[in-house]
Image 1 (spheres, rainbow, N blue to C red):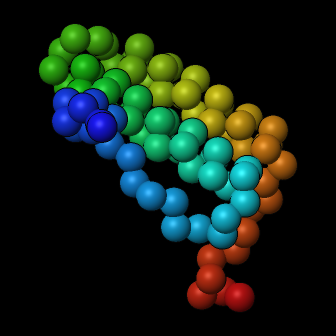
Image 2: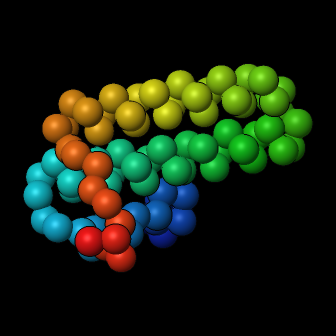
Length: 83
């Protein structure tokens, strides 16, 4: 059983894309990225960390996410309305 507090703090949505292991892993990485960016933005907005620190932390997280995309061997796909 999932703890309601855990579910509130770390919400997960079900994956709706093409089912492939790499896509599933990247989706989890993307959700974690979004949660961390949200926390950093909240800390910056509340004055707990300065803007330049928040920017650098988000930039570092982006680099990690971008590298995970490459490591998983995923390819950028055009939007469906352009196909």
